[in-house]
Amino acid sequence: MLDIRFIRENEDAVREAIRNKNLALDLDRLFAADQDRLTLSRELEDLRSEKNGINTLIQNAKDDAERASAIAKGKDIKASIDTLEPRVREAKLAFEELMAEVPNIVSPDTPVGKSDADNVEVARVGKLPDFSFVPKNHIELGTSLDILDLERGAKVGGFRGYYLKNEGALLALGAMMYALHKLTDRGYIPMIPPTLVKAFPLFGSGYFKGLEYDGSVDEIYQVATSDKEADGSASKEQKFLVGTAEPSLLAYHADEVLDGNTLPLRYAGFSQCYRSEIGSYGKDTKGIYRVHEFMKVEQVVLVPADIEAANAVQDDMIAISEELHRDLGLPYRKLRISTGDMSAGKYRAFDLEAWMPGLGRYGETGSASNFLDWQARRLNVKYTDAETGEKRHVYMVNNTALASARTVIAILENHQEEDGSVVVPEVLRPYVGKERIIPKG
Figure 1 (cartoon, rainbow, N blue to C red):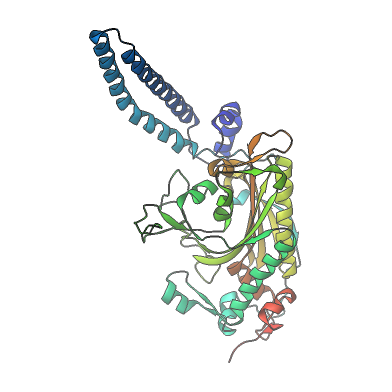
Figure 2 (cartoon, rainbow, N blue to C red):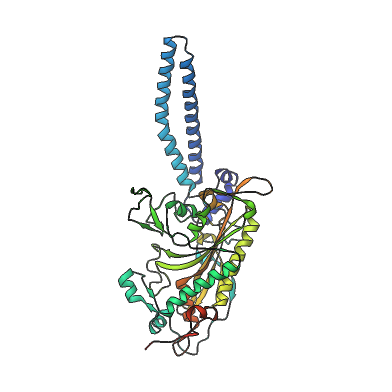
C-alpha cells in the first residue's frame, strides 16, 4: 500500500503503473474518495469539538433559559454526530478499499509488457542434458522408481493430490534441508512459521487482491472450521492456510518499530504451502508440476528504506537460489519479470526456471520480489533510523530458495540414466542415503 501523499505527488508514475500492470483502478475515483473522507472527518471533528463546548456553556449558564438553550443545542449536535458517524465510516471504508488496489511503481529496469510473454531472459546457465535414449518424464520415473504415487494421492487428497515416498520423500526433504543449511550459513535466521494464519498477514503481504478475502480470485484456502479463543469462546476471526512462508515471516514484526542498527534482518522459513490454483485449472494437470500442497524454503529480508540497498539484497538472494540450482546440477534460466506479469505490490521481480526435459521447456522454480515499503505499510513495520532518529517503514524483499515438488521434477528428469535409474545430486546424498535411485521390481 502506498501513502496517499506519495500517490498525489507521483500521480503520473502511479497512473503509469496502473496502466502497465493491466489494472482497472480509477485513480480519480480514489482522489474523490479521499476528499470525501477528509471533508466528512473534518465535519465530524468540528461537531465533536462543538459538543465539548456545549458542556462549558451548560456549566456557565446564567439562568435556566440559557441552560435549556444550551442543552437543546447539544441535543441537535449529538443528532448530527449520530447521522454523520456512519457516513464517515462508509467514506473511510470506500477510501481504504480503493487504496488496497493501488499498485506499487516499478523499477526503471522492469520491462513494460502485457503478459508473461514479455518477460526478458537475462541469463541461461548450465548445459541441457543430451540423452542417448528416449528420456522419461517425472511421472514415469516416479512410478518405476516407486517414489511417487499419483493414483492414491488423488484418491486421498483429490485433484492434484500425490504421495512422495521412499527415496522421493528423502529427496524432497533433503533439498529443503540443504537449502535451509545454506541460508543459515549465509546469516539467515531459520524459522518454521505458522501456516494457519489470520487475515492480516495475507492482506499485508498482498495475497488478497482487495481489502478482504475474496474466494473467487484469491488463491488461498480458507479454513471453514471455527477456532476457539484462549477462554474457550468461539473465535470470530477467519483463518487461512498460507501459500508460502512469506506472509508469516513478514508479519513477524507487524506493528513494531525496529532498531535500525539491526537491519537488514534475514529470515529463512521452511513451511508447507497450500494453493487453491483457482486460476490455473486446465494447466499442467499431469504430475506434480502444479499442485495444491508442497514444501518450500522462503527467504525474507527486511531492509532500511534505501532502493539501492534493497535491490542489492534482492540480487544476493537470487544469487543464492542460482547457487542452489547449480549445486543440484539443474540447468536454469533467469527472467526479468515484465509489468504485465507482476502483482500489484511488486517494484522489481525475477524468476528462476529450471530445465524440465519431460515438459521440453523451462519451468518456474522460484521468484524474487522487491516490494519496497508497499507491504511494510500494510503490516505497519517501521524502524528508527540510527542517524536521524526518524521512524520509517522498512523495505521488504522475498525470494523462493527452493520449492519441493518442482525441484524433485527437475532432479529426476535431468539426472535420469538409460537403465531407468536417477543419479542423486552429490549434495543430497547424505539426506537420501545413496548415490542412485534404481527401479523397483
